[in-house]
Image 1 (cartoon, rainbow, N blue to C red):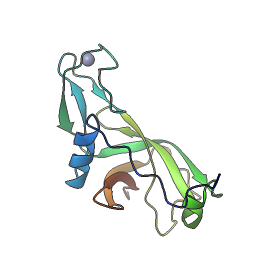
Image 2 (cartoon, rainbow, N blue to C red):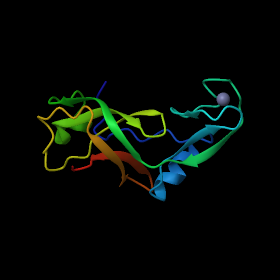
Image 3 (cartoon, rainbow, N blue to C red):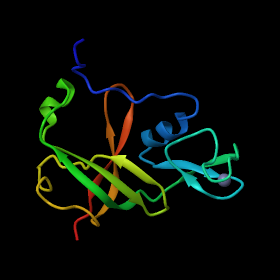
Image 4 (cartoon, helix red, strand yellow):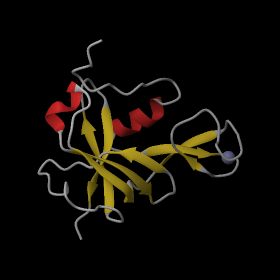
Amino acid sequence: MNAPTKKPAPQINATTQPFWDAAKKNELRMQKCSDCGHIRFPIGPVCTVCLSDKCEWVKLSGRGEVLSHLVFHRAYSPAWKEHVPYSVAMVQLAEGPRMFTDIVDPERRYIDEDLVGRPVEAWFDPVEGDVVVPRFKVVER
Ligand SMILES: [Zn+2]
C-alpha cells in the first residue's frame, strides 16, 4: 500500500461543520454546554462532563499557551516530506480546552526552542479547497 502524498483533509460532518465554518471567518469556536457551561474539544455530540446534548458554539479568544511541544525531523509519510522539521504541540486555550495543533514557524525560528509555557495565538491557514485550518503562532514577548 502506498502512503498518501497529500496531507489528509479534515473530516467535516454535520457535527463539526460549525467549527470549520467559523475557521473560514478566522474565528475559533467550540461547543459550550448549555446545561453546565463546559467548553469542550474535541467536538462531540454530548458534553463530556454532564452528557447533555445541548450546546451553543461560542467564539474563543484564540489565545493560549504551549502545554507540550515536539519536533518531527523525519517524515513518516510522503505527505509531510517537504514540511520537516515541523512542530506538533498541545495548546492550553485560555478558555480551558486543549488542542493538538502545530506551531506555524515558516522561518524555523522555534525548531530548537523549548516552547512549553510560551503564549500562542490562533492563526487561520487556508488550505486546499475552501477549508481553513486553525493553527497557532508564538506570540513574541
Ligand atoms: Zn455539560
